[in-house]
Picture (cartoon, rainbow, N blue to C red):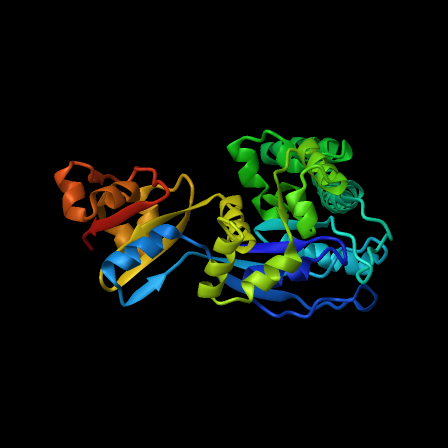
Amino acid sequence: MKIGLAGLPMSGKTSIFNMATRAQAQTRDYLVQSDEINNGVVKVPDDRIDYLASIYKPKKVTYATVEFTDIPGISSEDNKSASKTLGNIRICEAIMLVVRLFESNTVPHIHNKIDPAADLDEISLEFIFSDLEMVINKIERLQKEMKSVKKSEQIKELELMETLKKNLEDNKFISALDLNEEQLHSLKGYRFLTQKPLLLVGNCSDEQFKNEKDEKVISFKNACTERGWTPILISAATEMEISSLSPEEEAVFLEEFGITESGRNRLISEAYRLLNYISFLTYGPDEVRAWPIQAGTKAQRAAGKIHSDIERGFIRAEVIPFVAFKEKGSVANVKAAGLARLEGKEYLMSDGDMVEFRFNV
């Protein structure tokens, strides 16, 4: 699960990356941009895993993870650099778009003015133009191929590409289109930027985080709402300090300031949800583990996450909702209350299902 951090130079992407991954990647100077890409894998916070670990005292505890990749800023002034940057973003499963809201005397904005709406428009256009170029090239190839022979598959694909072209020319993302399952399947190989799941992060100051009426905050949120995007505010400078603390020190700090959840945990959890992932849980004295699966995954396919033999020889899944386990205190009590279930291979897994798979190979 790879999420690319994208944005204009000097937006604070690397600070957000360092905060999320607890890394110490060198922040970049806009005047000395490099091609270096930073990668980091982080655990997805999960109170359920913490609770099960406290009960079973297992030899091993395994959380779901998300990979973040910090990609150099998008610069429309350098076409070669921009093309390479967009290519690096294209291979990610989702995009975390960082937009700058904070003012600074020491960190200049590349346009010498903080304007979140304008920054979003600039980045959006870069994405749209890049996808539009791919679509136009595909249309031209299809039209050339169809001069000799017209196949039904080609006709369908051409119609779809024409639909994408019109949508992009109207300054709209592909994700805004209501495409059917067949059309979505046919687009998988293209990795269109404007089709990817998108998380909007407003990199703000502490004062802006506390003040919803701040002009830049309002501008950022309104620009996101116009495109149907959900924004999240992060004060990267402060959150980097918090993330440098030990877990014990962080807990004390958050409690003293009345903060229920650190920006780091909030960001990681949102990124996990962004990819439409849920977790099912396995438990016992050997290991307590969260297994990431896409929402809508059936039980037999979920079993394959653990081992292909379990998927192949799947018989039944014994399912206990985590909330029932926490309420009753033990598996035996859950079963006594009739809250444990035996589910077949077509069962759609739910977030927090505690599962034991029965199989025979």
